[in-house]
Length: 165
Figure 1 (tube, one colour):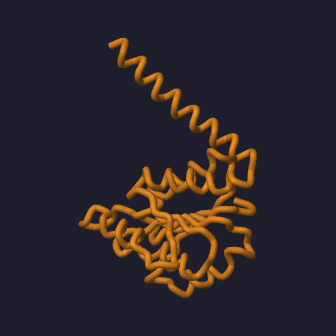
Figure 2: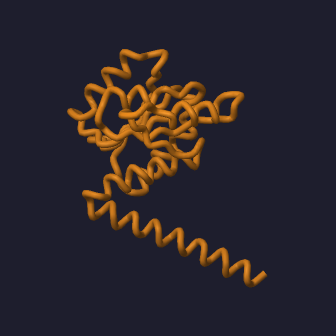
């Protein structure tokens, strides 16, 4: 996508199905983004170069998904002041708990905003990125309000269906 504001990165292409949920959320809000594979362990030099170029490329937020040891979000956060949202991926025998802990337990001074494990977390990462960008964009803020209204209407509709049954 031309002139992306959000960069979605994942440790492996096997994470694409989950991370596409973040891309879908960003698309719903009309936020330009990119998506790519970078590994904190298998391509550390590429991750470092990626981090050095974030601001000059106009990237305002990074959404990083990784499974297993899940160091990608933290490594990126260590190399930039651009906000990083971590998405733990369920890709190990520990059902994503290892990814969650590795992503959320960052040392003081290197924050990573961490969302839920898996697809719902990726969706929320996209929405959280929209909320951050919506602080400076009335267009995105208006779309976020419509999103919240749809959520409320969904609950009302479900409750009405329940009452009828």
